[in-house]
Image (cartoon, rainbow over all chains, first blue to last red; front, top):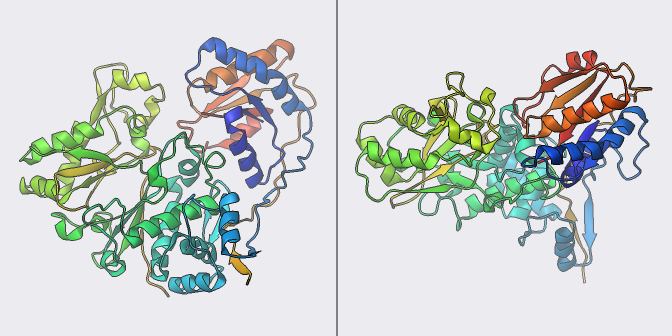
Length: 419
Length: 93
């Protein structure tokens, strides 16, 4: 049986239903648990006690409203006119709240054709609803997001990457943390699709970036059930959850392209999923050397509020250099690996400070960190190569740091051409 | 005015119905499992619940299994299930 606070009943009920056990007993107590005194926790335990004993000893009666796997099947919806269709989608929470394109059969067929795959092919099973994302499902949401058919291969690869167990999509979707699923595109497809990688590369203003990122989010919501307050328990959410698709500025990259660092060929195109927070700016208009610029970068990364600070060995992070910062750093003769090593050594928090954030667990730190020494320094990731580097954006003395969910590793997939 | 037909963007959950474990006839002599998700205060809550159960029922102690992170699935659950008569989990925060 499961003890659950009032604020999490929706997620608990949905999850037990989606996993085929709608009658799993819950003991429901007041929220929250973290940050409360021991006296309050003991009172919560008193409140839970009769429910727990009952849940352990009395057979559950079927919940009439909770048929297992009761997610609606694919269906055609008929409306009097477009206005009624649009308003109904909004009312049924089938959108992200913004205007969208109605997914008529003709538009969806064109989108499916762009994938070069069969409509019914299952690309991923998406939590927390654990529903199948077929090519058709993805196409429907891509139409709604304003995609062009040629964007479909990117979306399919992105869903495959997000479904990799290393990414931990269930937790990324359901957490109270404000992580989004960020897509980083690298390779020839950037130019082929007209993805922006110059000024404003994190948005807005460009159809390919905006609609691909938005379609990913709509799949996560409509197929995966990542609905705020239901399958998505994010305390605040994030603007990054509307759309988060970034492309590499390969021409301005002084190092090998991102996909090559990840083990792919220069001729490949790839998409990488990160459980990213929104980008945090790194402003350095003064430094003229690699060392000083990286000091500013490392300082921006060294903060105890983000999840990577506590969940060190289980996550990775991304530093998105603006071309000018990248040039300054590379001019000092530093390779990508050199930069990763320097940042790994400099972006560290004091153990004593980390203990303030309570969610630290020594087993999530590298073994060599002395947890009994409050002055000891702890990195924000387990290895230098967990600090990923990419160059994106236009002119200007800015870079960006993207912390992640912390218990999630980025995953890269090759974008396959339509068959 | 012509009607309009559109496609639902929802996906299909194909997980079939799964049985849940039969409930216990009694708590007497049962070893209770505490499957803890490592979030702050969660272990204190679960341990207190087990302690309170022990005041009115002669349970055979508790066996705690702690996940390193709430976001990571627990390993070795089949073996754990054989060692305890019931498991108390928790979800929140």
